[in-house]
Length: 444
Image 1 (cartoon, rainbow, N blue to C red):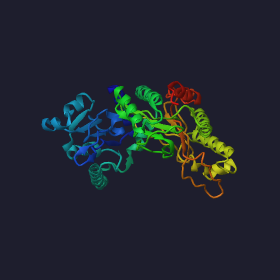
Image 2: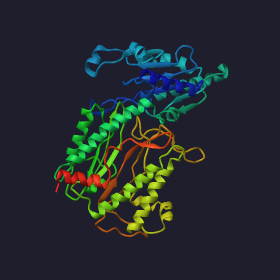
Image 3: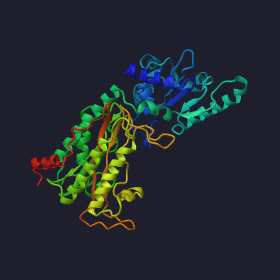
Image 4: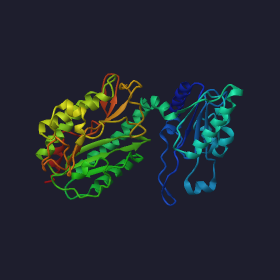
């Protein structure tokens, strides 16, 4: 991977020209009192360095005569390493991570000016680390006051996250290798969940079994808090309590995926706790699946990003009108966003180092950017009819037989040169597959 990180840095160095880019590591975060959350590196920082420690700064300075890539890191400290784990230290930062120069983090104030003073602009993200922000802004202001005499120096600050979007939204072969492994592990966990879910078991049991597989197979753990939502809980989009007992004739919605090498999978399946869908569940499930398949078909190179959401929205709206759950002209309903009473979220998002991965969706003229080979996107339409649903003015009431049904189906899709590849195709989603599972397990 060292060559991969080097290639990424070279691309960014070329893009920033005479600028200097400053990237801070993620901070440590306190769970309670003096107990910390497990450390998770900042995604941009990791993408460029592979360095997985807090209290670090990476500098990219293409105009510097000797040091285009610089790391500031925690020094070796035997006592602190005894408590909190080994540190790479300054020498390893150079030898292993390829830095042209490396310094103890305490020397940032002293060493940073030489990498900034001849830049024409700075690239950094303000807001994550107040101390780093204050340091950068103070240095920038000092250099601005000297600009009239020196005739050079940074005259602007640009957000480094916007800079990084153009690189991270297209996945390399090595990135896709990690994502395929995350998907394979997650698919195994979903298949196991389908095998063990039955009336009387608790949502947290399913969660525990899935996350056991994540770790057993070498993943870092869940990519995000696992959603295991039975019955009416599925109408809560980010339900994570996972503490209810599953009942016959309910659906179970599972939205869960693992992180492997920091790259994420994101999969949702909805299936009966018992053997069969009820008639209402079947009808809505077929509608969501139809919407998802049409949305996936719109994920093609060159097609605008909005088209897959538009395809899902139209299919769902037409279906809800046909069922009498919405009434009115389909185009008008979509324009007035009436469908959002039942389908209130977007159809998908980019996926990669972040679950909701970076990537600009619109151009300055408000047109949508097209999909490109190397994009990975989730496709996840849904229908949710809350038990306490209240119709908007002019819309029909909903009969009790529809209430409390929540359905989402989500796949991870890679845009290829000629079309797309469904990375999560191994996870069953047809009604036949779902009901065959129930009959085989004898859950009645």
